[in-house]
Length: 185
Image (cartoon, rainbow, N blue to C red; front, side, top):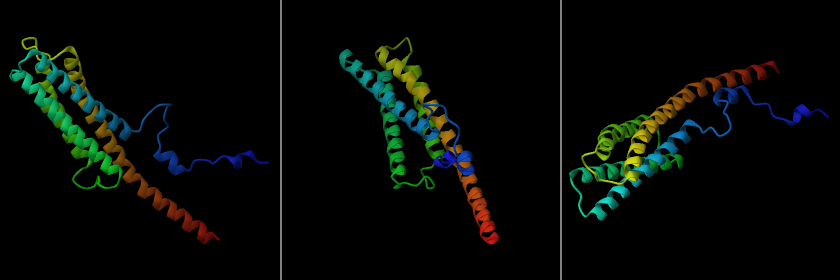
C-alpha cells in the first residue's frame, strides 16, 4: 500500500497564498478585528470610569466633559466600524464601495489623532482629576490600541491588494496548464 497517496500535497497556489504561520498567529484581518474590539472596549471602560467618577464627585468640569465626549465618540465610531465589518462578512456591504479598508483606516486615524491624543493628555494631566486610575489606564490603552488598529487595518488592506493581484495571475496560469494538458491528449 502506497502511503503517499493518503496525504494531499498542498498545491502551489495554496503555498503562495498562505503564509507559514506559527501556532496561535491570527490573519491580519483577524488581528484588525481584535484590535478594533479592544479599542471599543477600552473606550467604553474609559467612558464608564469617567462618568462614574463624575457621579461620585458630584461635578463634571470642562475636562471631564471633554473626556466623556471623546469616550462616547470613540465608542460610537468603533461600534459602527465593527458593525460594518460584520455586514461585510455577511456579504451585505461591499469592501469595493465606500467602506473600504482605506476608509476604515482613515476613521481609525481620526479616532487616534483627533480624539485620543488630546483625550489621553487631558485624562492624565495633573492639574485636573477627572477619572480614576482605571479611566487613565484605559484612556492610554485606547490611544495605543487605535494606533495598532490603524496599523493592522493597513496590513489587512495590503494583504487584500496583494491577493487580488496574485489570484488572477494564478487562475490564468492554471487555465494555461489545463489547456496544455488537454491539447496533449
